[in-house]
Length: 444
Image (cartoon, rainbow, N blue to C red; front, side, top):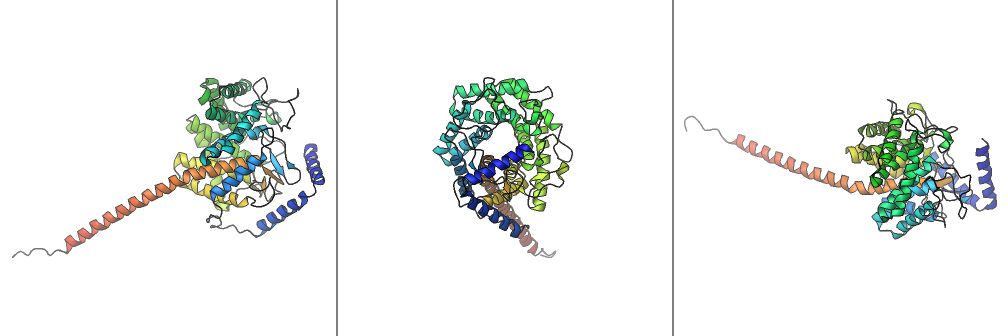
């Protein structure tokens, strides 16, 4: 409680230091209040595309580029009360693949350069053990002797290092990535979980499947069996927490509800590990949970910001980051299964997310993904957050990659059906003409 109180006081003090932010704050609260009061949710609410995906993607990536600090790290958030935060190593790490993806797809040199700067900054933070520290990091401040290693941060940063090595073939980056992976494997518990001082709140968490995903990626680059074994062990441990209802136990966030963001972490990490490690059990577990959420979305036209056990009840704000993550999951499941219901749901939720992006305002707001909708919701209130932008950018790039494939499939199916119908019609006409001929008489 004292930590939460401290945060509130700190952010309030930020508003006192820059009172001009009060205008933006009041305007955003009023806009969300008006929209949430008068919006209508019905079957066709999200059927019409009003914002081009390319434009929305450009806006979100620009937010990320503007959030990059002089040290190369990406700010955790832009607060309507205090402005930009310090650089956040964890999120900077897994934003690197997003920047490289956008740089490739859009031919954007600025995004690739931002990924390079982020990588160099992260390498400067690596600890002698191979681990990376938790928390935010202020520009120009060296790591102190009390810096604590973090399992989750190290795993997320590892994802960025593996991708940076793939793009640059810099041997130093792979060496550092291997050191991080070795540390994660060395401190893993026998049962496959991570606990102790380097785990958040000292507890094991099923959302550390995201760490397993990074280790699975590293295994492909390092060819070191330790990394693959560590990934599989954690997946085995996490799968034991998947319930028949699709619910996932073991998120273990003391003092917090089960935010959709963390539920989606578990599902996404499990799915991607299943694909990389060719594990049908992991794909099946992720699919079951993702399907429950898809049905809830299609039935209620929204996903809740939090869920209770067995996906019953929850807080009714929207966790926009969790929505973007589920879009990524559904799109990947469409790739794996070919089931268009996943693709359809992802298009709808992407459209909702695109409509939530501010088109006007100051830097730090335009193109930003809010922690919650309405902005005062329980998850990261009054903030636009970098990881929300990361996952929405990923979802929009997946949509752009898959949409032409789906369209081509439908065009091919339509042409095939037209040919089949034409052939059937021609055959029927021939048969009718044959039947219309007079039968020869016996006396002919």
